[in-house]
Structures are given as structure tokens and as C-alpha cells.
Image 1: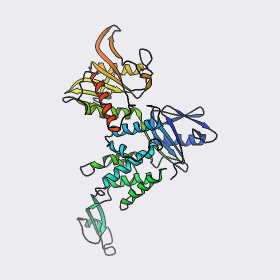
Image 2 (image 1 turned 60 degrees about the vertical axis):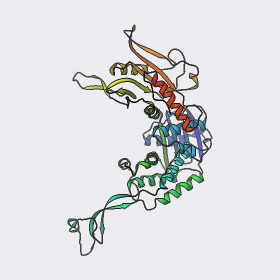
Image 3 (image 1 turned 60 degrees about the horizontal axis):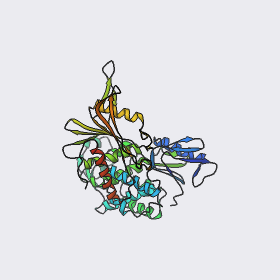
Image 4 (image 1 turned 90 degrees about the vertical axis):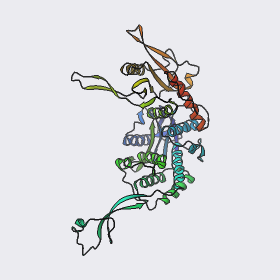
Length: 434
């Protein structure tokens, strides 16, 4: 299938709106279609500016008809590298096998994130289906000619048994038509409608053929969540996660007129937090434990003693019940200028509040590295009481360089080293990396 027109833009970037479609320009009608898809998806990916479409800090792919807009993170300002970095962040955050990215037969320069995600999905499925398609016992209620399992005569009594001489039975059947396979098949069906390369389209079609005897999925959100993970289904974890991404990006509501929409996007603040959290767990020393967005405490109570203003730090390192340190991640680019280095005052206020409320002397703010921070010292700010006396608590600001040019496995090891160093700045000596 022809992938149509593809426009690449960076987060917080924009695309011009003009009278005719072009390589870097969309029409007003196309802009409205993209905005409607974003609204239907419930994701504030873009907004309408003056003669341009402005994008927020969501990265991924928005597709409508023959137009695909790929939004990449601002890391190295190189499409292939930034696309690869986003995929690596997703892999680490969701504990996916990195070797899939190394083995994938795709050129990062020529193929969009959409192609990569579907390729990833297919490779995972091919790997798992080598063991055979998953069969599970499913409870079935059916009218059958002979009694099987539990016969329910009270239900037969409600029918004209002499006309329909079948038995109403409830039984367990080992079948490929189970919820996990329905989710995987539904995702493949969505992928088959996307603008993919010929080779990738063939792989999707061949995988769909494996699921011929699998029924259709109830596409309501609740049906996607009701899946028990056990030892039989655990190895389908990456495939299932990507399937949910694809299905969540192509809900029946994502339409604009006759144009079917697709919005596979990720909020970068949440992704960066999940990514750093996964690295933290790998380097945290024995005897300490990490909690994400916890423990949740209230900052105050009102006059009726009702708790108010819930706090949930991104990361809390604990020794038993004692808070050792706290840290928050911010997916923002610092400019490195002045004593503040571009750090927003509200972020410092937030960490000062955490320090006081959680009785933590060590708090950290972690940002992604950018070229503007080259040669800039990582600042430490000592909190004061009454603007004069140090409280003993301090804020240490650090940044994590995602732009190191290494193969995926070595790249993750380097990032673990950086996170370990940031942790040590907060008084925690991390586990040796590797």
C-alpha cells in the first residue's frame, strides 16, 4: 500500500496551513481533520494557530486518509536518530526486548514510526507463534446434540424440546478463540488498513491467516483490559501491549467524515518518567525500594479536616518507611542560561514542598539533555528558611543525555550509568551497571 504523503515535525513545532497540500504544508481541511481526530482520541496533540497547526509534547503518528504526520521528540534534530530514540524509550519503559530493534529489517531514515511499531508487533508475534498459537480453556454455553459438561434442563424446559432436540450445556473447551487471540487479531486487522510497505503488509496478511479460526473482538475499552496474565500468556506481553496501542489508536470514534483516523501518540512527560523509572529499578542498591508516584500524601486539610491537595512525587526512594530521597522528571528543554539555567520557578516550588512534606533532605529535578546545556554545570540549590538560614535540604538538578550514539543495548547501559550518577548526587550509591 502506498504510504501517501508524510510530514515530519518536532514536538512544539508547527506545520504551515495553506491553500494547496505540499511536502511541508497542509490545507485547512486537512488541519481540521487532524484536529478532529485528536479531539476524538482525547489527546491534546495539536491546536490551531494563525495559519499553522501547532503541536504539543506528544510524539508519535497521526494518520488520516493519505496524510501521515509524524511528531518526533527534540533530541538530536536528526529524524532517524530521534525516531530510534523514541522507540528505545518505549522499549525500556515497557520492558520490551531491545534486540527486536536491532533485528528489525527497516531503515530508520526511510520508514516512519508507524512502520516501526507494526514491524515490532509482527516480529514479536512471529517469534511467539513459532511455539504455536495460544489455546486456552474457554467457558461455552451452547445448544448441542449430546450432553457435555453441565446440562441445564431448566433452560431446556423454556424451549420446545420436541422441535429442537438439543441440550443446553455449559462446558470448557480448549480453543484458539480466546480473548488474547481476539485482541491480537483485531490489532492485525487494524494494521492491515494502514499505509505500510509491501513487505510489511504481506507479513501482516500472513499473520492474520494464522488467526482465521479466532472470532471478532468486542472493541469496547473494558474488553481490552479484561485479560488475565498467567504463565501461558506472559510471553505475549510485548505483543499484547503493542496490540493495545494499535487498537487504542484506531477506535471507532476516530473518524472525520469518510476518513478513518489513526492517532498513535505518547505523552512525553509520562514516557520519560516511565523510562527513567525502569532504569532506576535496575541500579537501585539492595535494601532500598523505589515507589513511583507514591507514597501519596496530602499537603493540607480544610476547616472540616478534609484532606486537600494530593501530592505524588515521581520517584521516592525508601529504606523501610524512611524517605531517603525524592526526584521528579520534567520533559522540558533547559536553555542553560543564567543562574536558573532555564528551570521554571514552579518546578522548584514543587520540589521544595515535597522536601518539607516528606521530610527529605535530598530532592532532585531531572531533565533531558540538550545541546544548550553543553559545558553547563549541574546546579545545586540549598533551601533557606526566612530567606537566610539553610534548612539542610537541597535540590540537585541533573540532565540525562539521550543523544549518545550507541547500539541499543550499549545505549541502555550508558543511560543506566547516567541515572546511577544522578542518584548518587542524592546520596544513594547505586548498584554497579552491568
